Image 1: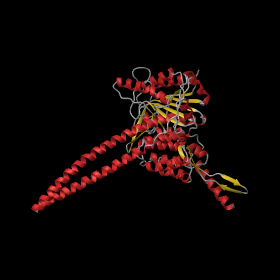
Image 2: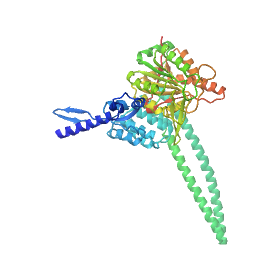
Image 3: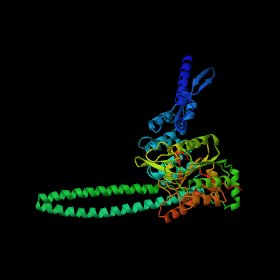
Image 4: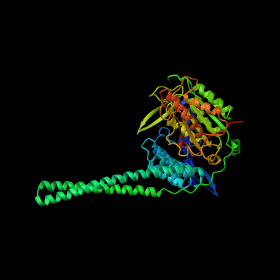
Length: 546
C-alpha cells in the first residue's frame, strides 16, 4: 500500500508540475504578455489529475477527469492539455475516449462532437451517430438534439426530418401527444408522405416504360431467332446475342427498379401514425403574459461590441451607433446588465468573453451582440471558418489578430448561463454555427404559449441570430444604422410583451430582405442553434420591464 501511495503521489506531483510549467510568465516571474493572456483564454480539452482520497485506513488515487475549460484554469488545477495541437482530433479523443468507453454520457457526447467536427481531418458522421446514440440511450438531451440535426441533414444516416423531429421532441422532454409536437410532426408527416408518393409514381412510370421496351425487344428477339434458324447466318446469330444481352440488361434494370419501389413503399408504410393531440387550452388574454414572470427567468447580462475605427481595414459607418442604441434598449427597456465595448482590440474582446464565465449563474441569460468587420477562410473540404475582426486586425491573409468563431463557441459551451443568444451583424456572421434551421420555428414559438415557455425554460439554449449567413452584409442604407440593426432596434423598442428569439427573427427577416433587395443587394438573415456549444433546444426570452 505504501508503494502504491508513493506512486500515486508521484503521478499527482508530475501532473501539477506539468500544469505549472506551461505558464512561461510564471516561470520567469515577469508580468504575463498579451500573447500569454490570450493563450490562457483558449478553451482546451483538459485532463485533470486524479484526486487522492481516503477509504477506511487506506488511500487511493481516482481516475483522471476530462473537462473543457480554459488553458489558464487547466494550469491552475494541475491539468494536462496539448498546447499547440488543439485542432487535432486524436489529441482530443485521448482526453475523452476513456470516460466515454466507461459509459459517461457527457464524454460520449464530446467524442461524438469531435468526430462530427472532423478536427484536422474529414468529419466521421458514422462515428458521431454511434457515440451520440450511446449518450442518447441514457437520455442525454444534448446527444438527442445532435442526433436530430444529423437526421435533418442526412449526415451519417439517411435523411429523415420526421425522425429528426422526434429526437428534438425527446430532447425537449415533450410527450408524444403534445399539441406543439403533433402540429409540427403532422406537417412533416404529410410532407414525407407526399414526397414518397411522388417517388412511387415516378418509379411506377419508369417500370411501365421499361416493361414496354422489354416486351418490344423480346418480340424482336423472337423474330430474329426464327430468321437465324432459317438462314443459319453468323451475322444474324451475332445480332441475336446482342439483343439477348440488351434484354438481360433491361430485365435487370426493371428488377432493380421494382426493388427500389418496394423499399419506397416500405418507408411509406413505416411512417408512424401520430397520437391524437389533446384539445388546445383556451387562449389567454394578452394581460396574462405577466404570469410568466413567476417562472423565474433569471438575471440578464449583455456584452455589446461595436467596432468602427479600424487601424488597418476600411472604417465602417454604423457599428458604434448600432451598439450604443442596442445597449441602451437592452438596459433601459429589458433590464439587462450591459457591458459596452466600443472599438475593441483583440485582447479587449477575448478578455470580455473570457471574464463572463465568473459572472454568470446557472439560471442566467446572456446576449452577445457584435457589430463590425467579419471574414472567412476556406479550410477545404467545402468548409469555411469565420472570424470576428477586432480593430487591430490586419487584412487577409494575416490572421494573427483575428478572433476565430471556435474561440467564441468554445466559451459559449463553457458558460453556466442557461440561455445564450449571439446576435452578429457582420459579414459571414452565420458561419458561427453549422447547424441546420429549426423544424419547430413556425409552431409554438410565441411566448403567449405557456406550454412552449414551460418546456423551453429548463433547456439550455445556444442560439445565433445573424444578419447574413455566410455572405457579406450591408453596413448602411444611408441612415445612422445598418439595415439589420435598424429593424432589430425597431422591433425591440416597440415590443411590449414577452418575446422569443424565433419571434424576433420572424419580425425582422422580411423587412431586412426587402430593404436590401431595394438596393440591389441580397441579404438573408439567419436564425439557428450553435449545437457545438451545448444547445439543448432551449430558447431566449425578451421580457420588457414595466
